[in-house]
Length: 414
Image 1 (spheres, rainbow, N blue to C red):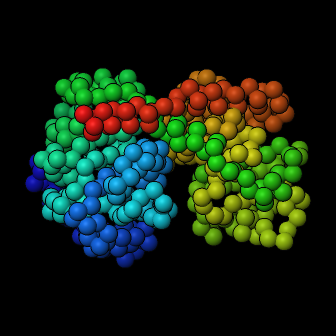
Image 2: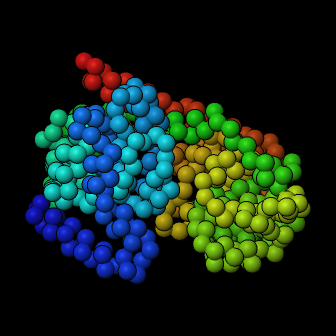
């Protein structure tokens, strides 16, 4: 089976080189891996001690960040190495300040895994939530590294729990310890005979709680908001925007709206702007403008959505009307904001919990969206109650980082 897997990886690597000619994203994926080993050799000496974190993409990086920060604090003499699988994570966080080295993870071949681990030679390894690369895990199993999965979550439909999943089940057994988000994940792993597991919860709660401690002020948003009830539409996709634009165009109140779309390509931003009948301004057009005179702002940049949520009275989180996946509801929740989402959220435990607690409202069509936004917009008591539920939920679920760190330190120091 390993032979077949390696053959597939080899064929895929050649096929991706062809696709890279036609796809900018795949070109980043391919080109970004060309000089990884040279970068590592130039920045990690044989005498260096290191700790390796691997994240599939941006969300996993943010999820692992609280652990990275604490590990860096506790192991100041170690170099922190962060790898990404996806360009959408690497390109946004390649200049992060937490890591000493940030690179793409070379494709999962036996030779790449051997070479990577020979250069990095990590004392500790953390895979964040997902990503189970058999060759890397097999090499780690036979190394002196301690390998952990943090904020893991397992579901019955995953390949590990299928009759044909033996190959991946063996890869799982390379981990020294699993820190998972829930009881069902423990039970599924126990069915495989894996008992080196503990519920830590989700480190994303620690991440979003820490957001409250930083300066979230944005003068231009303050000017735009102008003490007016404001709905922030975060990480929206076109299916979300169709419903929301319809609501805005037929809205007669004083509420203001801020779009922070998932896709900020110029043509799609312009199309969104043209579809809105209210007075609308782009983030990129804000200079020398009376921002208070606009009712809608479209944020055609990245990296500031979390700060924008701090100004929201209501948040709509995108992705729930499509199949790409619901975006992060914890960021607005930590600010004590009521949340509205689309109907597709069954794979997101935090959204399920918030809907059940009634801090978050799931809508399935235009009528339900209109009703939810109208009620929240007109009823301050309702907004405050649901916002309080959201903020309390986040505070009650923090602490995963402490559990992970205590375990790692006990193993390391004893």
